[in-house]
Image (tube, rainbow, N blue to C red; front, top):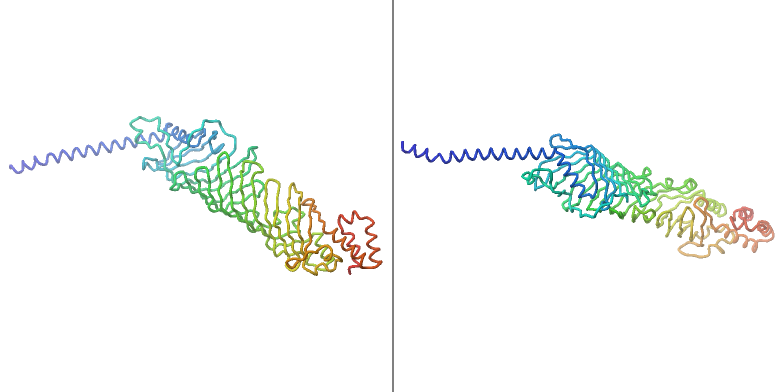
Length: 482
């Protein structure tokens, strides 16, 4: 009996400990549940919405309007977001439609937002911004604006920042304007998927579909673009675009954003049909596909300051229907000149505004002719068109005096003569026909008796027209050349 009483006395402390532990567990559960309810109530309150707006305004340096939030379980919805950038902002306006974000509690003193989806995002980069005092920007993708509008005891349970997982945008529209308000660069209806990287403030962004528009260039369809965004700079790891049906453009580079945006792109061009870019006059005279390397640099905001340069190669090139080539074909008795197949065709170029500089031009038809030189095009005018034209020995033997008086420099298997081309793209002028005419007349008058002299003198009664084209004189000499 004494043992039983002793055992009962020993169990009493354990009993009370279990009771106390149970009550404590209940209190903790109730406390956590109360905190959970309070946090959930806060998330659905205007105070939380105001906190989001305040955090975004501090981070983006903008005035923001956010539509009413709607909750469905752990997912929050908003119909729209409107932002107007202040003086320090990277943008002038930012509009989002159809926002939905998945909340997954808290971890590491931060809201866990594993996924954000946006139907449409439109961002404009221009000088149309609101005035504001300069403030510092956070260095990561988290909001750290102090929580307000909640009881003091609850604040320690509410994180002041958020960790975001992926951001999916069905249609992204980015536009860059110059100081005059003219659009220089635009991404339209691009599908994007973004995810934060280890480095603070760095995001990995993949883009698909949509279009890219660059001033003075054709609109391009986006196949795939892989980028890395670090604060105010976008690094392009890989880009693949297409335009004009089968033409392809790929490359790498970087884009600086903000008030002074800048492009630095290293691109590769392939399969561009010349008929897609030539005027109606030249479309049937030059054919082939362009390939090459292109560098694009400069500011998309400043009109005319975007530099485009590189080296182009023409594959399967053919030149036909040019009056000068037809003329040479007639008098050389070599019909290959009428449809000149180009086995080598390349040139370096620089484009800035409406000025195009072409250098290191090489056009070669094996066993027949080669053209080297440079020229400038501005406002469709051909400026400083200086070339060397080479032909294989014997090619011009049927034109009297051509090889003795015009093509006099022998080098690398060709006979060479300088050639100057001026005029406009639609009506180019060259000085070779007149020189060939002069050489033919001089040779014939000197070497062939009276018949040739009379024919030449008859034509030379009007020398100004002869010097301008040379065509009529050569036609009149046909009987003497046969």
